[in-house]
Length: 321
Image 1 (cartoon, rainbow, N blue to C red):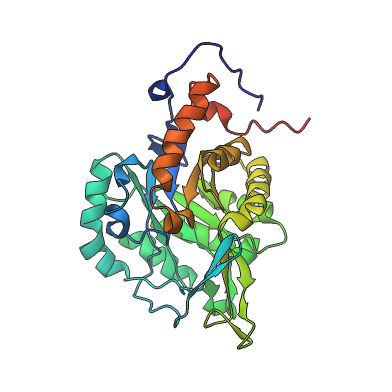
Image 2 (image 1 turned 90 degrees about the horizontal axis):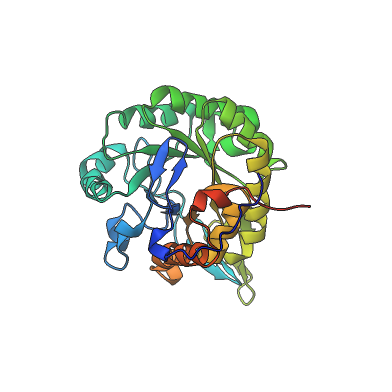
């Protein structure tokens, strides 16, 4: 895609069109909150006006409640954070009864709702997708395929293209909503993973999930997390995420959602130039809950100053000449 021409005509920030279309979901702006960083919505509602978001991605939902890992489950690292929450969640029934009413209110304000779903077998993903059929509070599903496939000895669905394609196809078959897949970076070729999911019916790809990492307490010579290793997020992973967004967007024809170390509007816009149609903010929410608001306002200002009237014109404009 060629670089958009900047206009010499002055544009007011409020006149910049931030609207995007991502895998069957039209959003007022490209900014979402990443799964697991804002619970099911109410957890952050007192410190951030969620109405500023283009979309909200819920904490992962399984067919039944998961307890998660024993603490400590979070550890701060240089330029990042490790977590090993273990995908603790309330389960499908409680989600539909207790969490959906708030999400309906959020959606009524124009924010698109994406439900992250998890499972330990292909059948469990399919079951959650079927359980969400007809739920008018939900606009799309996002598959977390970093879960261990217990039928295959605990190997994660997201590390092998055939397994990723199988679980994607099963979810698509069970769902009446667009299905996005959140790709793991802990693979040799992330582009091939994206291709497999696209062929299986995914309409969008969230890139990337956390990188595997570890931190230790030198005095006790023990890991800082109860299970040893965990998922690394935050500014430290941004260069890896940018590279993978670019690779996946080059290999696939469906929209890519960029995730990983986004701290401000400049970070978010870099992901869009690399090929992302939208972005998700994760770890920054723990440091500054108003990051999303600042990113939306910063995007408008940056585009206005450069005469860019539509933010979609920036997508995939990386110049490698």
